[in-house]
Amino acid sequence: MAVTVVGSIAFDSVKTPFGERERMLGGAAVHFALAASFFEEVCVVGPVGDDFGEAELDVLRARAIDVSGIDHVAGGETFFWAGEYGWDLNSRETLETRLGVFETFQPELSAVARSSDVLFLANIQPDVQRAVREQCEGASFAALDSMNLWIDIARPSLVQTIAGVDCLVLNDAELRQLTEKPNLIAAAREILSWGPPGPSVIIGKQGEYGAALITADCFFSLPAFPLESVIDPTGAGDTFAGGFVGYIAANAKGAQPDEQTLRQAMAYGTALASFNVEEFGTERVARLTGAEITARVAELARITRFSDAPVDLRD
Amino acid sequence: MAVTVVGSIAFDSVKTPFGERERMLGGAAVHFALAASFFEEVCVVGPVGDDFGEAELDVLRARAIDVSGIDHVAGGETFFWAGEYGWDLNSRETLETRLGVFETFQPELSAVARSSDVLFLANIQPDVQRAVREQCEGASFAALDSMNLWIDIARPSLVQTIAGVDCLVLNDAELRQLTEKPNLIAAAREILSWGPPGPSVIIGKQGEYGAALITADCFFSLPAFPLESVIDPTGAGDTFAGGFVGYIAANAKGAQPDEQTLRQAMAYGTALASFNVEEFGTERVARLTGAEITARVAELARITRFSDAPVDLRD
Image (cartoon, rainbow over all chains, first blue to last red; front, side, top):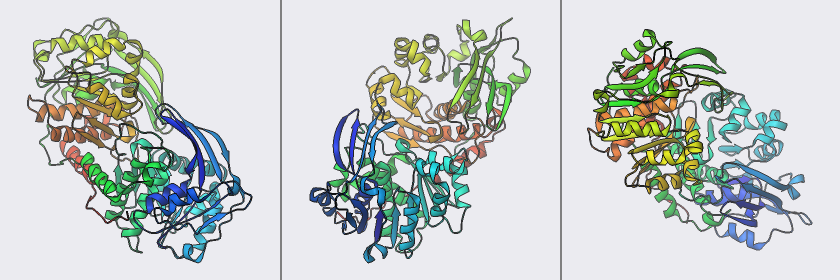
């Protein structure tokens, strides 16, 4: 199995200015897996409760995702999140979170999941992420997402967990919070200096503004794909990560990705994320085609291209 | 005279986490003029008071800027602004604003200023901007900046003024506020639909995230140049506008700029703005060289470049 993702599998109730959905399929691992499935085989690991059924599994199976790592906890309730977005989608309020089966989640990976070349630790408690990383110690490329909550209440554990991965994916504000450095480049350089071991690739997610990638030798930045209508940003970051990590899994072939691979992976992640926000939840990505993705990547290249032929300036 | 800019000439007292300056030379017209002076002759129009002297004029003269349009109001005080930035420079608080000679500013342009091919109306009261536009009716390319204050208290006048220019430069949040559209693309399309007459080029400034350009046929976006140390963002937007409009003045040669020219102009504006924030006020741009600017534009091209060679995806 090429890519294993461990993280939340959820029901989301989401209200945006453009509509609402009750208890739709969501969760970081689900959004990631759907996006990564365009590049490689994906194994999803996470717990669900009695309320999670065949209809939800079929969304994943339709993309040939391995659901054998989804652990059905008898008598349990699937993770539930309810939230509402502001008028321009740049703010959101959590209305309700019920951890359900996640409260006692202690992942025990199958042999298939453990043998993955590439591992994505979606945003969960950092001790749990580290336990998974230790079970997948053979993975050649491991990436991790987290959130402000864990920086606030479990920073030492999070820092220790970060030391065990190759790539850290965080919102740029969270990178600043984690390092107490006031800007993205300074924050990324600080984290790069923690190793080795430690991540050699830092990604700052910037929401509607796109994402930036920083390594010891390279800075690369892409705007988000411009959309006239954005319906629901839920899962955009995980969909980005799925495109990014999936591309690396398919193209780095067991080695650390080179700079060109990282740049292209950023473009695929950005393209995937832009589809995700066009409709609610998984609706758009679930019926996406490879041709639509490559067309959007080509469009992204056009959007950012300019000639740097030198001109005469007045000194 | 190729470019005329009308707007504030100021003293700024600025405090950031990285230092502070008292009564340094600033103002939108000053930042714009210094940046645009790398591309074309620039004529600055705006009022100053008794406190504005030869030292300040010399900063402009050193860049061969025409200061004959700077109107010394005897007994008056130069526009003064004091502000303080938050730890990551993404928020700022205005501590004091004294309009001084700007309170009664009624621009009367000289024949030289009126004859400019290109006009930039920096952020001032929209009635005053419109009066200037009418005096420069021969300009082949006119651009305008504004701010949330005028959207709040003078929206009808601002909309009328926008109808008389070719290019609108606003923060993206202000574009949304002006149009009541929740995203940048929808907001820009709304403004493009107001004409003709009206702007055919919309720029959404995005602060540390860069800037986006929207026309009827084109979307182009550039991240800000990555800097490990940003000292003072004051004037970055006007410096961007100076590079952007200056590049157009030098390269569009009296016609409306084509798409390639607009893209390159965005790159030069972005490069200029990145120098501006490296030090306080005008300090860095005042001693900048053309070679530094072209090197940074080339670096910007590298930062955003990726291959869009298609890959096989798993449908």
